[in-house]
Image 1 (cartoon, helix red, strand yellow):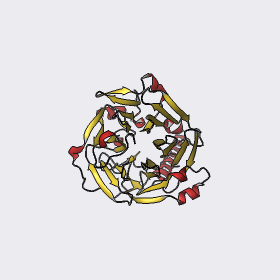
Image 2 (cartoon, one colour; image 1 turned 90 degrees about the vertical axis):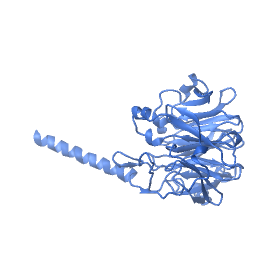
Image 3 (cartoon, one colour; image 1 turned 90 degrees about the horizontal axis):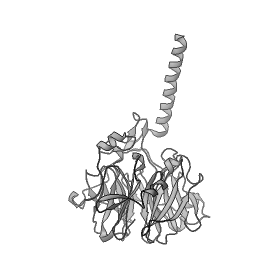
Image 4 (cartoon, one colour; image 1 turned 30 degrees about the vertical axis):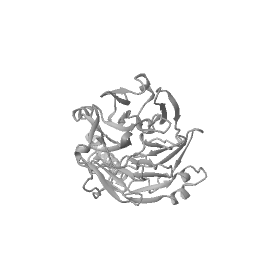
Length: 377
């Protein structure tokens, strides 16, 4: 009997070793990334707190008349409302408390030029129903809805950022795909309600072997067996709908691709990839936006910073602060304000609810760069 128990124990230890080795081989590793930020243009005092939340923030979108909308980050496993509007210094479920049943794990939000608020819900990493929704900002009514099937949003997908072109007819979505490791972009035709995956696992959307070192913690888990190395995360359209900019979080280069190429259903991935252009070296980033002069705004998740990249790839650090734990999504608002959602990922990802509560509050900041952008994006 003892010999049998010993064999079972040895077999269990061997199995654990094999599983741990497999996890480390697939998700481990990672080298430190060089700091590409510099002395910021604006002093930390330029940052204003706009929203204070007891739960970690997801993404933010600000309308042309200054209404602030945001999600509660799904990785924090929120128990209350998941899409909110900040009204008179307090959160209000949008479009209503009852409507929160529409959401499973909403994250990305953006406002188009037709005054609609779009949300992308990854459906608990593709286990549930990944869903795209649009709400009329005046009435709160659902004006568009699409559930993605498994050919577009597979099990293990993570649809988490989106942009809408100026016509309101085309939506572009980033699939970070950490667990499945099949990142890519999704092109959605609103009128036809048709979606296509493009650039699947292309080198431009895939992570490189970098370890994200945030001041709160190095982003590795389970004793270092799993390292957070996300694929394509932030995406942004230029103001003329000419280029879609995008960057994998754990990647050293920002890319852009022509919107006309993305909208061509006959263009195969090989031809599409051939048209992808490197813009320049970037920080390990999350959210993106663009301004009215054609520059790209980039968050830096390691240094609590927002950088600006010119179309030639030149970088300038606009603001940097220890108060920002994880610079996530960006959205321009009216009067040139740029809003920054701090999702505080190290204090919520795979953390207990007690830890999340103990490290509250969580914030949305804003500051005013010298160049404005289109509100909501």
